[in-house]
Length: 440
Image (cartoon, rainbow, N blue to C red; front, top):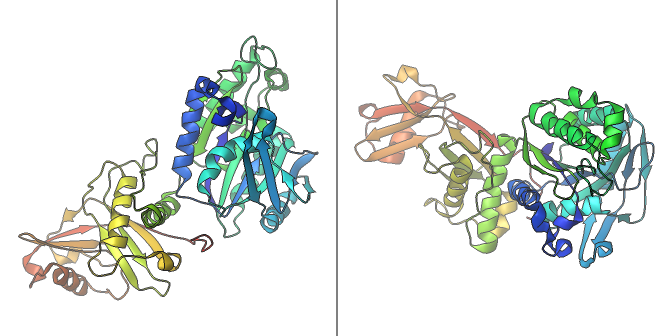
């Protein structure tokens, strides 16, 4: 299950310890990388597949499977900025088997994998929130044709080993954007970069793959195949370009695929509770203003259940109280875990056993009679004066309209539900598919 996918540039200068102030010239890229990290922070994957055009390479896709990967920015004057990640050898082998059925693959098995700068730069931003939970699979697509790289993305899209995966396509674009650029100037550089950004925004994979070889070669790029894989992987998804610029004569593009609310919202609820338990602070809302679902104002309920299915907390809103759904989820997750008067506050030791779900509500509509209700389809709201009772739809043991109304009335202290104003609503229910107990 791919929980997020992105394309990032890899200039070491945007890492503050390397740039030493010069990163300000690439401020749009730095801001976009920080936004990407904040956006993905609720979704800590089990495994990340990182495509680096500067890793060891061979003909076809070169997969480097190591028990551990290590690297630093020593050659860029910042030896203190170093990283170490566990490898995902078994997961990488399973993924490689799927790929090798249709594409040439070479596997390298070093005792310790070296992280090059094209790996370290995105990891410096995105890896901050992983807290040792995420393992890495490193690969280099430079030995593939762009068409095969696109095909690789489509193969990845079909891969599902029941674990959670992130995808990073490390890619600098043209190195020849203006005179004085690292590889000199070529007018084809701007044409290539414009085609890449347009393809990401508009889904034009076929257009990008049809670029003349002479134009691609003249552009002096090192990211075409990483981008092509990203396009194949996200062929059926909406994509967002967070930034594009070329401040040093090299094109830097930060882009990602839309987040799946079915995965993102329960994970956000869990991450909110983790943050409260770890720091006592309410999680800051992730930057998702370009996402039409996550940024919309919608009411929701957040529910927590134990591993054996017992309710552990449930708090929600029937009308939105915040400007964006992600803010609504964060607020209601805090209330469900720590302010539901029926239960004691959640503690750290039980968090791993809890299962989170988020119900996103439609706008309530008043009904004229109980024949317009269905407990499997509609939740209900009963109102009588200042009293209000709410019950979500499709609850275990609630099989009839009368039972649904009785429970909602009891919750509100209403004697006769039929003497109340009755409203109905539908929900989109998003449950955690799974979560790793490690590190919880």
